[in-house]
Length: 363
Image 1 (tube, rainbow, N blue to C red):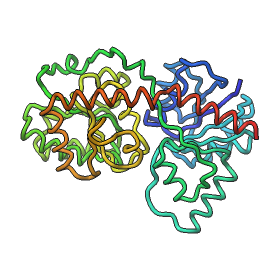
Image 2: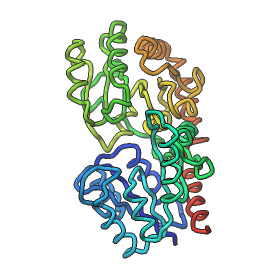
Image 3: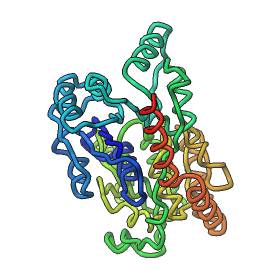
Image 4: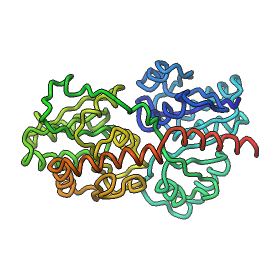
């Protein structure tokens, strides 16, 4: 049995955390067993324990370059005899893995901004070769971004995010009952961390336009993050605070999403988007932006609608288009579900990741 230690630098449950939940679901028989090292005291540690996943809590808080964690990680890897260290943004994890004699795999979950000059690319190339055996990109867009930053192309393999699609069969919606929302109230839903790259300000401006046609519509936002206060202030300034509901981080996301009439992902930068796949698995029509890996999932007009990032006018028009056409909404939702079932299952993701583990150990 291959022993794998996943190292995360997050305290809250973001894309990397949910990726781990899907990868370590225990639904399928694999040749690896895994544990997770992450900063102590956050939602991520709590939910990992609730899922009976072995956790090694780390001191030092959130930081992908927390060098103080190297010593403790090296000790954990050596004492527990981990064969592979699989990192998710943690550079300290990569260093510790190599120091302990383990193979190192890294998954990149996002698009990194900013250009890289020749010197920076050379340093990135060198660091990649020294501290990593294989790099997983969650989309073609992420792979291209890695190559542009200096990572050697031969080190990168694409493994799309996957979800357990059976978990979304027959899900009962609880949102309308919880908030006492009537069946005829349109619910536009978003599930993402409240951070700049998710483009929430454009979604809120778009919603301001939407309620001119649908004054009783609600925008339900599920997620937590640094922008919460600013976004709530923005809603107040626009006079739409009674139509926008901030629900914070929730573990019962699929039950809440089941009551959405449509799903919006307004990101200005996105690796792929697990919440997008989850909404599609529920058969929800989606409006998303043409950025990162999203166009690798959504074909405009076939299984969703695509708009340019940062354009609240077109975003509003696309939302209204779906709300005003039930047949279109149903068709887009059906095709969305079909896409996820056929191309983005957790079973495929797990099998391909297992193959990467086997390959790096054979070197």
